[in-house]
Amino acid sequence: MSRLIHSQFLARTNRLHEGVSTSQLGNLSYLYEDAAAVTKRRELFARDLGTTVSQGVMFRPLNQDIIVDVDAAYRGLGMTGGLPLRADAVVTQAAGVGLFLLLADCQGVSFYDPEHEVIALAHCSRKSTNLKLAAKTLRYLQQNYDTNPENALVYLGPSIGADNYVFEGWIRDELDGWGVNLRSVGQDKYSVDVRGYNLEQLRLAGVRPKHIEDSGIDTYSSTDFYSHVQTDREGGPEARFAQYIELKS
Image 1 (spheres, helix red, strand yellow):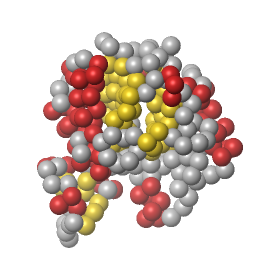
Image 2: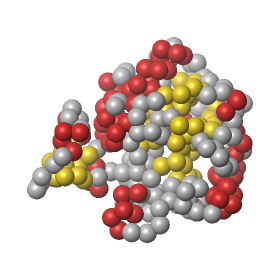
Image 3: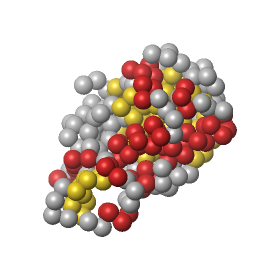
Image 4: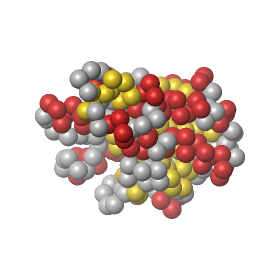
């Protein structure tokens, strides 16, 4: 496994710096390791993507449905220290402004509207997925940038698979309305399919199935990506990988 993977779908446009880091690169969160080591890895990640760390905007999610627009004034925010932007999805039409999100099970969703040259990156955790953040991000693009959902290109990065995301019966009340994406696995336990529910939301919002690329990678079972749930159950150090998207200048 290399230090990053790409969306083959988005890469074909040749308009984006985009990708997801792997465990081969190492932890990219300042919360779990020496800052100097993390900064070096972030710089290497940016170089592998074809950009620089100073172009990025790091955002830390609230597990809500807060969507924020950014421009060139936000460049570098949180990338080499300091406080990141607080948001659940970030949008920009500014070239050379990258969106940087740390993950370890939650669903990262990258959006690109090639007609209006606008991008977005959403952090779809169980809670924000329940608030339909992916669909709301697309609606935000429609209302603010005239994005036609049928033309939007969407990439779902690595996230925890339903077979490994299992809860006690209380989860039924929290996730009422998830349909087949909340499945009984016996003994009052339920598997939660965050990826599946995001895919459903995107299709219902009007994104063409052929315009959605799903990485299909389960962070829990893959050794190439970090999983908070696996660490919580089996022990070991916490770590985070990153998903990134930037319009080329």
